[in-house]
Amino acid sequence: MRNEMPAIGAEARRRRGAVVLRALAKRYANFAAVDGIDLELAAGEFVTLLGPSGSGKTTTLMMVAGFTPPSEGDILLEGRSVAALAPERRNIGVVFQNYALFPHMSVEQNVGFPLRMRNQPSRTIAEKVAGALRLVRLEGLGGRMPKQLSGGQQQRVAFARALVFDPDLLLMDEPLGALDKNLREQMQFELKRLHAELGVTILYVTHDQEEALTMSDRIALMNGGRIVQLGTAEDLYERPNSRFVAEFIGESNVIEGRLEDGAGFVAVGGARFPAPCQKAGDPTLMVVRPEKFSLAPPGTPGIPGVVAGLVYVGDFTRYLVDVEGGLRLIVKVQNRRTADRARDGERVALRLDPADARLLNA
Amino acid sequence: MRAVLWAFCGLLLVFLIAPILVVMVTSLNDSQYMEFPPRTWSLRWYANFFGSAQWTGPALLSVRVALVVSVCATVLGTLAAVGIVRGRFRGRQALEMFLISPMIVPIVVMALGLFFLFSAVHLLDSPVALTLGHTVVATPLVIVLVRAGLRASDPALELAARSLGANAWRTLIYVTLPAIRPSLAAAAVFAFLVSFDEVVVAIFVGGPASTTLPKRMWETIRFEIDPTLTAVSSLLTLVAVFVLVVAAVVRRPGKRGAGLTV
Ligand SMILES: Nc1ncnc2c1ncn2[C@@H]1O[C@H](COP(=O)(O)OP(=O)(O)OP(=O)(O)O)[C@@H](O)[C@H]1O
Ligand SMILES: [Mg+2]
Image 1 (tube, rainbow over the protein chains, first blue to last red):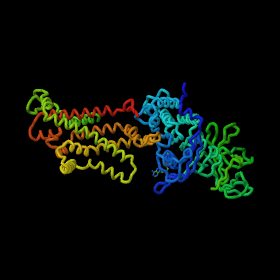
Image 2 (cartoon, rainbow over the protein chains, first blue to last red; image 1 turned 60 degrees about the vertical axis):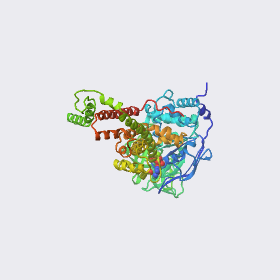
Image 3 (cartoon, rainbow over the protein chains, first blue to last red; image 1 turned 30 degrees about the horizontal axis):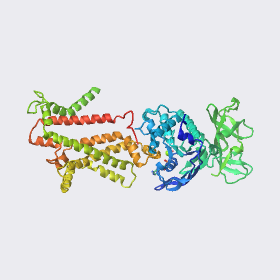
Image 4 (spheres, chains in turn red, purple; image 1 turned 30 degrees about the vertical axis):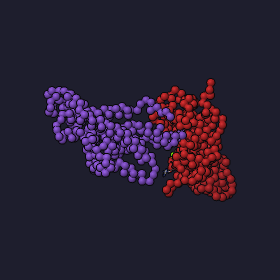
């Protein structure tokens, strides 16, 4: 029997599609939608552009796809510049948020379209289409029209169509944005499986940070047309390089104050926190993730505070704890033992390992 | 309250349809005079129509002109609409206004202009003049219809096609146009009907050698009272209804798309 999917199967082990974005920018009349982006994707890497609305994610993707001409900079695919190539000559697959399936073509015709445009013989097309539909688990639905499919099925067709011609790079702009939460989680899983099976380089856009954290090899966090931090999920969560990153990714206590010799970090209100280094200097912000604190009985070593509110969330409890100077901190504690839990209004001591606090320069 | 609404709608329908029904019933008269209601019935005026070159000649000309106009106006109007809706160039909106402006020019003024134009190039009284004139009248309508279809269709379809390896032309032919097929069909049908019904331009630029059916009717009513008119009117109405019904059926999206073969 023949390989399930000749073209894609053969490529699965060959990782390819290294991408370099070099000082890429898109400026409109008096406004920079993308303001100079440098980004390298290794072949086979899954990189996500994450950022608030209007941060330039889609614009970046559209430039890579060839739909929007960059104002400055270059795009290299496998080492060769594609910035001047028409989109149809870049060999890049694109998946759109609303699927963009051709409404007048059946599923098979949709998936076969890129192969027809490459003038492949109809026998090859039939084989590859069947293989691609099997890959996205849509065997048997090839004769349907897009309107006769559910949202998740349509999205799978869009994946199959973007993959069937064996692109060097796959671009996806919030491909799961239109799906409900359950289906979205299932499709995230499917996408990861496809990525692992095919080894294609993926540049992914989302503004759902959880999606970004769970799916990507690396995340480029964008704001105002720039990449503000590039790194793994762990880098961004544990080692945010700015207040923006700390507040955008997950929950953070961002505490203003300054580092004092021997006294650790002193918040504006006077509360003292253990600091990861002793040297006084520039840092004026300390970032602590809510789960890095733990609660201890009052009087024991730690930062004294009073529970000002709590929400029980099942596996953990979220506390609001007021410390000296009216500073209110968010504290997340696993509900491992009932004895660990504090009551509303109770006095507590907050424990913090200095290695878990992060100092930033404003 | 509902009863009043129904009664009102009923009256309105009667008011709109009654003239047509009266004409249709009268056309079945056996008498020389157009009596309503007819005392004796026959199809003699229909026989008269089909048996007389005076009528069938203009009818055939009308159909031929309308078919050519339908094709020309649909092609021109569609290309213009694609440019207007998808294009990115300076003066796009001005061009759009200009292209659909014939719709707001009084038809008599348009016909007079065409008369002078065609007389200058010695084209008056020719099927070519009629075809060109009617194309001018029908194209803005096509533009408006196709423009609406394009605006309602997702531009991401075209981006997708480009990323999948189709160049701009293939994208237009395999994706953009098929995706708005209903609008194209409607545009072609309306272009046909506009030309088929048109009388003002036909009177101005047509002549003895190029008399369309509406022009023949107009001339007939001026010089004689021929009950054949009622038969012709009924036939025209039936043709229009038939064309619209066919269009409605065609517009219903089929199970399979138009088989795309390269
Ligand atoms: N054609 C244009 N002319 C002017 N400004 C534009 C144009 N296209 C996009 N912009 C602006 O560029 C900025 C970036 O837009 P972009 O679509 O890339 O954001 P995004 O990160 O994808 O946001 P979202 O999460 O909402 O999709 C926005 O402020 C947008 O208003
Ligand atoms: Mg976007």
